[in-house]
Length: 113
Image (cartoon, rainbow, N blue to C red; front, side):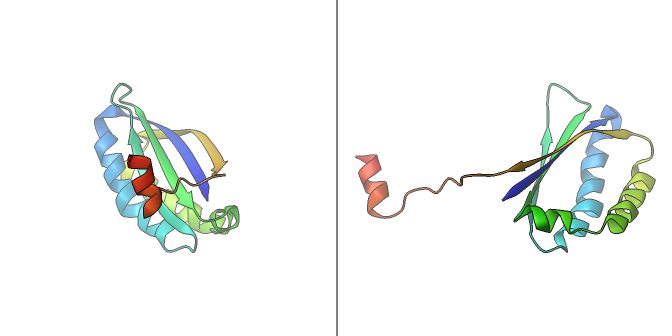
């Protein structure tokens, strides 16, 4: 699994609208592509102008296969909805190297003892 991590600086007055528009515009757009596993929106309660979006992709290839012209079109739509109220501050990618799998069956019983 691969994580796409985006940090935004957002006008605090429109933070909730940013989250709503992101859910209405970006999430359905990404969901149509193979390998998109889901998304989280992180809000820092102490830093009102910060939003972090965390997208989960099956592989790096899936993430990078999203056509750049479609990304630009979707950003134009989002920018039209939000105006000049946000700025992408940082973009990163992470590879998840290990998955946590809770024990099942007898293993769980042994742990509880």
